[in-house]
Length: 563
Image 1 (cartoon, rainbow, N blue to C red):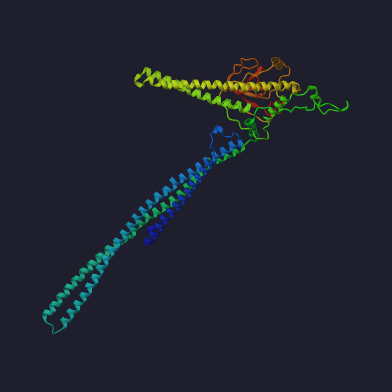
Image 2: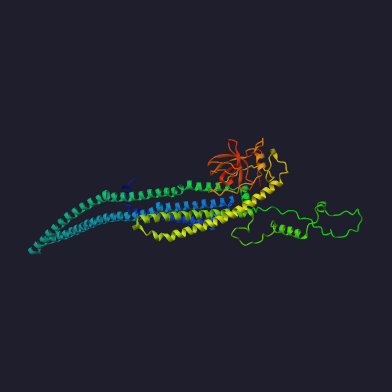
């Protein structure tokens, strides 16, 4: 339906309607602006929240508990979620708000142009009407004057007292007025014809054309609003898949929380390696007292202590004092200053810290070595091409790097010595416990080095990040080792492992393995860094625990776990 034919006389109303349409478009643009401001504020608050609860310490110092790792994963997903809210705000800003404001300016300019054309056409028509009206009034006035002249001439012509000159004068006046009335009539007719023509053009050509342009402009505004409504929704819809992935990541992080693993991490983190304190010996202070009772007097001294004899006072005090030093279970652990060799720590914690320090020193050594090699190559290039630089200028840096390498190697050797000392003590302590437990009968005819058997119902994976140093060679009684391998009833398979690195197995009792080779686990690590394995060919021996990735099978019959 065309506005030009239906609304030809509603120019002022169309003026108001188009102004309302632009105002509505700008109001919607303001709504979008406030909406994207909310999104930006929401995203900023989420990012600040994540930043507030993110760990401030380095990652290697953060707790390894699954609950903490899952929480940090949730924080990461929430940070990504905040990023998607920012994407929504950016999409609304670029594709909706900015587009609406640009289009609003275009609409205002186009509306102004169309209204000016309409007003010009109306002004031209009004001008034509005024010309026609003036000619009409002039024609009317001239006709009245001609009538008066006719009446004056008729009166004088019929008056017998009038002179001839007065009659002739009235006749001339009548002729002039009649001629002027005829000219006014012709002019009025011409102006009327011109006005009618211009009016037809105005209402049949100019106004329909102008109103059609205004109608097209208003319809384009409506279409643009519909498009921006859709873009507004699509900006939100486009990020829904990514937001769903973020939420799925949060759910996965929640499912990754493992209470048993966290408990094992607590044990691994705080295990001291000390043995529980032994029984306090009985000190008999009455042995020097004279007996005045009868021969049948019953002594309260335990028989075992009477047989063993009295314990010297100095030795007893020493034993009690040594035991008291380890009674930290429900009391405060004494504060000991940190030492370079970590000797202030329990054996297990000391071993871990020394191993960690060795790894760091090896990384620094590799870095310094690479830097030295690069400087030597650069020096060779300068020697071959002197125009590129002076080779002597690199000598101080090379000397400094060599000095750093020597210091690092010295530190590594010193820490390796301490680590070997700790591992040697732990191996000796394990052998002593092994000898003490040999009197106990064990299932399937096998003897446990620790005297402890548990059925493992979970899987455990060990994946080292770099090739670690080999542990101290396991100490075993040669005859006991031969007896174990010559047993007619072989140990049951409790899992399998994959070799992360090759191992030559040159020492007696060890097993040679190639990288990526799969072996059967028949006995877990006792704490000395070695795991007993069996090849598919049936050959058995010990391999370094840190060289393999171990998987303990679920519900393994006869599975033995040494604590």
